[in-house]
Image (cartoon, rainbow, N blue to C red; front, side):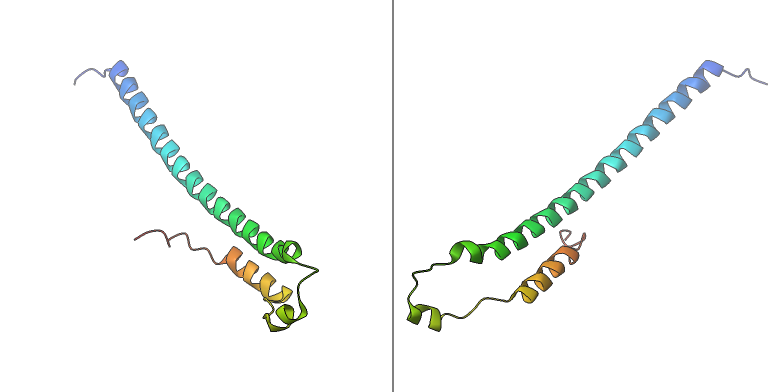
Length: 99
């Protein structure tokens, strides 16, 4: 029967533990990166919807001619804009960027 080398076993256990910690940290980093990209995409979508909703307030011209306003087609109404905003918020696909 051969003697048990305790120091060698402890060294190997420490090495395996360090490798596992690095693997777990890599997984967490990848997942956090994905979550932050999804969060950024959602925030940009919200900002885009807000910008489109506020744009008519700043585009109004009180001196526009009557003929110009009569021939201009109106933009989408508030319910349509809200519906598009909700669709944009909840329609992301995390696998869309993969090819």
